[in-house]
Image (cartoon, rainbow, N blue to C red; front, side, top):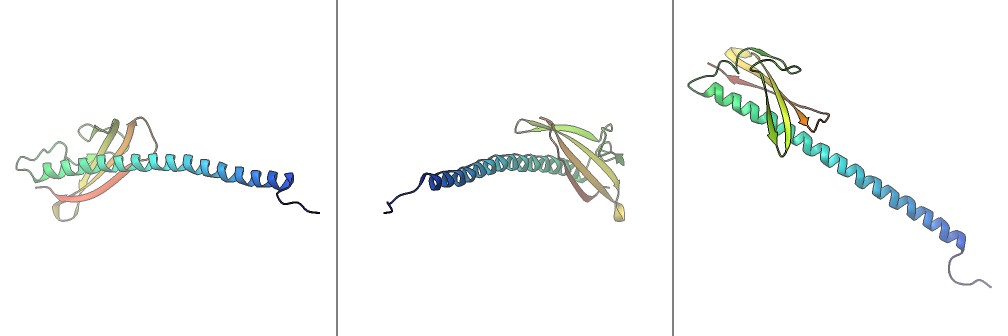
Length: 134
């Protein structure tokens, strides 16, 4: 005569399967948190680079052009005088380096790289643009 219910073996198998599901869910939560943090950092680096591009565009469009920051040269990998600075966004410090070169028809080609300094993190944002410099 069979009684209703589960055997001990069936219960243990169900608990093992349930445990794997819970562990997988916890691992996904942790990975999701890391991905969210990396996405936030990448957004902040992009904003820092965009801010510098806008500053340089404003300088190029003003009547009293700053020829120092818009001088040809610079480096995206090393701090070159007048072609790098730092900015703080939401408690993080970013270093911004830019390069200025000749573009088509008298325009300037500008590249800006932003990287996190505080806290140090991997990744970078690099933006390129052209603008008229007279």
